[in-house]
Amino acid sequence: MDKFEEAFNKIIEKDRKVEPRDWMPEKYRQTNIRQISQHAHSEIIGMQPEGNWLLRAPSLRSKQVLLAKIQDEAGHGLYLYSVAETLGISRQEMIAQLQSGEAKYSSIFNYPTVSWADIGAVGWLVDGAAIVNQVSLQRTSYGPYSRAMVRICKEESFHQRQGYEIMCSMAFGTAEQKEMAQDALNRFWEPALMMFGPHDSDSVHKGQSMEWKIKRESNDHLRQRFIDRTVPQAQYLGLTIPDDQLKFNEETQHWETGPFNWDEFWNVVKGNGPCNQERIDHHIAAHKDNEWVREAAAAYAAKTELEVA
Ligand code: BYC
Image (tube, rainbow, N blue to C red):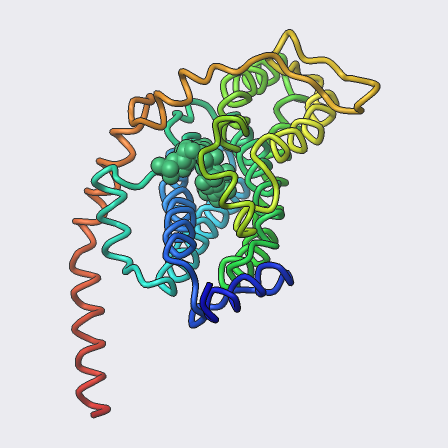
């Protein structure tokens, strides 16, 4: 082991942060690029299912709040792309990987949002799951990623409240509204649990990522925390979690679920979910439509540089 590797190992061992200019193993760099860019893509693609309801939000207030939330997601995406850039990959390369299907993004965003209650379920469950994962990532070993998570988590907790507020008004509203809320929970429950990734036994990156403290807690551990937190919230709403095997284990003090449909998960991850094609097609079209903005920004930057020189 050379002195660089020794210094890197010491940073990890002492729970300090790895910074962009520190020496790091190539696999550490690549694993962070993979995870952070996937995270950024998820934020950007995640704007689509929500944007679907912007023009149909039921009041001016709900429209303003949803708009603010979607703008936050854009901010998170850009913030995370900048974090990944500190590891030596360009934004153009990451976008190309997303559009070619080489880079993944969270499976959850390949499901459609077919009713206003779905916007409630997305905020409550999807942002709720994201917070559990991202609070843990605040302690990740790569400094810029860890600091980004601190800021992003603050906004995510507003997002979760936005969703739960919608669920409250629907679940305590008319019988028809309650039915819509239940239907949204039925469709989003299992996909939200799958946001945490495969079971630990099938998580290929678990060992190395935990050793390098990129991931601080395992997929199953975080999923369980989310389940334990969310079941009482569903009970308060008077809604039923769509799992007839769900039961509370007095001994462990945890909620236990039935088995998940992992075939569906892998099918969605491989690109065959209900909206995968639509999401990527939309991203490609928007990217092309806005080419003139990038050109204008680059021309302005070049002109400013010339003037400064
Ligand atoms: N979907 O070894 P594993 C948001 C892949 S956005 C798709 O456990 P790892 C929001 C995984 O990539 C929140 N793919 O992997 C935005 C790997 O494949 P590759 C997004 C998945 O990385 C807008 C393979 O399966 N959050 O909050 O150790 C509106 C094996 O898995 C998924 C993040 O991105 C999945 N669900 O652990 C509202 C958090 N799960 O790469 C809300 C950051 C697994 O070898 N990411 N795969 O081809 C992470 O914490 C980790 O990457 C994961 C997976 C826990 C997701």
